[in-house]
Image (cartoon, chains in turn orange, cyan):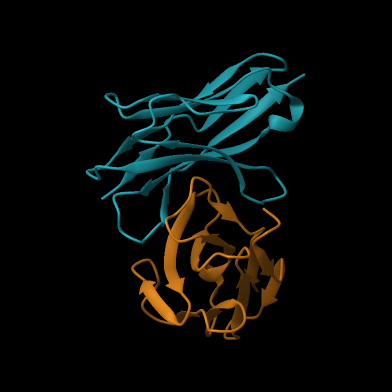
Length: 114
Length: 117
């Protein structure tokens, strides 16, 4: 859904570099979720954030990955020292308080590590 | 813990015919929501339809309907009058709606639908 904006759409990084993925939620949405889709797989939950708070990071790898959702600006998913196994599509979704009966995703960022 | 199972890795259907994509789920949550998404080859995730566990009627959105059978824990997607543009990957997903504030989704592995002319 065009309301959730992710950038960049495609990102190429060399092994060892940092990747920064951005997500701006739909207007009025205060909850942001990041998911990862490995090739030939469904989406896997990574982290759930509200403004200035990480609520659930149970799906985040223990090292090199971090996420934030500052008071101002987009949510950022940061991957340090990328490895080839980080190559995937990363999707962001947002929801209003209460969840809602729809759950829209951004168009995703396709990260390729070379 | 929630689990979504999509047992059909791939499905074929003739244009203009109806097709059913299977989804079964497992959860101990008293209230939950079920979602279907379409992912075309371009990669975006397109929301199709939502069914709440306490909804009395099956959800419908245009050519999409959700055949919800709570006792069997199934939430199959029915696409009527298939079109060539329906060729895509389809994902079933579930969310715990029991009253917490965490609205994360659990996804199945998907079904690749191919519509033949």
